[in-house]
Image (cartoon, rainbow, N blue to C red; front, side, top):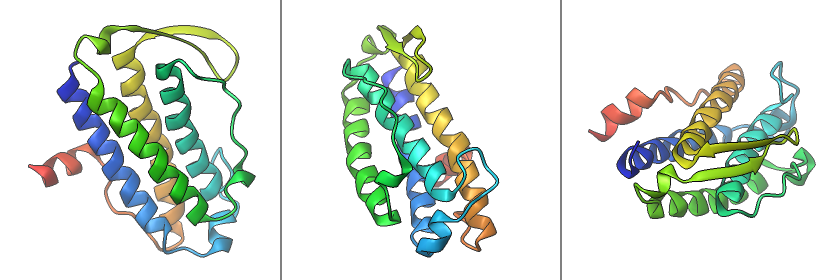
Length: 164
């Protein structure tokens, strides 16, 4: 894994986030909060979880992680979530842009959200962040599609073909 590979993955992550958030911008407050048959209970819960994943991993890589978890109530509206997402994505993209090939192979020590200590190479954790987000964005896409607001394809290959 090298810096260029990571940058492509993070550009894909930002692109797929944007597709989900654009589709979500067309739903009502009631739809944002409505129960959904997915692990995080609603579109809001799913998106908050996905964003929390991006936030907590960046905290770990920067050595400032606290694992407090986030309460979905901290994001009462879609717009409050979108504003926070823009801030966090800017921080995440800056980190990805500044990583070096050598830095991708440094060991990252962290405590999981379950309280367990772990060690990973930075590139492994960075690839995981994108994969984790993809899982939860597909859940969000299913919820949005059920509400009549499909984000369209969010596959990596679609992103790669469009930027070619």
